[in-house]
Length: 536
Image (tube, rainbow, N blue to C red; front, top):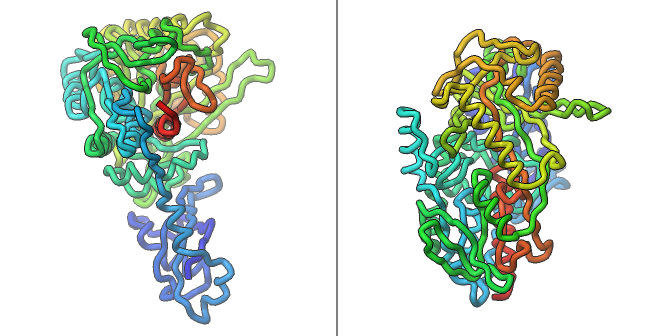
């Protein structure tokens, strides 16, 4: 008999502190909850798992599919039973692959981030033999270039934390949390698991992969695309579109080579600012939208653990604590709202930039999240009404990054300021302990940021400190964050998902249609599905 159990809650005091493999040893907890002997619990599948630390010591909360022995003791559970077929549909939903329409051979995809990779995978499985182009390099070359950057402080603008195979997400925490309820999400997670991602991403409420596993996963997905007929071209920069009679017929590379295609997907990511500008110049219709900037804030991970879990010693079965904080806009809108974003427990801060002479930060963490620091970005929305064009918005971001680079000393040292000094409007950096590899230099970040942004961060951090005592005392702001979301959203036909140029599709974060790895991958699949439904 197969039944579903929701909200199995196991309090911290019931779990041995050394019990790291709790997920594999739930039978006794299930039996106790159902008032059954343990031998009646044959097996189980975890459908979801989360940590509830809202009140007192934390608890694990599970939803499970449980296989019970068929006997008199379990007979009263029969009214809750469901079939293995129904369970399989939840755990392994079919990813439908339509047949490729005539004429859709060798479509071009620009960008190998989640949107580009997953669009390529579906099109390749459909027999379209897509051609995927990226100005950066494969993950192995990219990892070598990043290591060289660490050693020499010399940035390769075409191979770094932002540019290259897998996009910016490859060297990040690999968070897969999304607020969207896209039905493709489970398919995406299963593909990631087949490519080497941890199996628990299928059921954790806030799953992550880790920057040590992500490159392997990305490489394996690329190989799946290649085995299905796709072709990758690295180290080639797309300069402009080929457009004839209102229809996109291919792309032109920086060498002047013309590559023809029946359709093109632009999935160039947030770092493709120059390419976005060129699409705008070629008449691809768009609208300006709100986007965010802010600062990374770093704390000792132990401080976060103690505040969130209310335990002096974190047990092995609990991962490093996370937080999500927000401060709503003031009722009269004079002070903007602030939200924590991309929280990396046990992580590190990295130089997330692709242009020489500029500096922005980002957070990442490895699978184990074993670092001694936690970091998160505190972001403030920037109204599109502040800018008259896409180029003006990008100029604003570039100028901030240039100023941050200069404030740090011009060698990728990050300008930094104690959180308490920031809210007081003073220069202050008590110590330089940080996860950021290039080191810190005391600077007035409160003066670097726009006045409205500084006011919002000041109000928010003061409020966070009341809720999260010590947030100001133990926190330091490191650099600025400018690669949160796109100031541009290209317009798409709601039916075909084409842009204003026929046979040109735009997808993912750079196009303004996603906000993270999962949502970008889902958008790539969505666009590929529409392409396969079209006539060519």
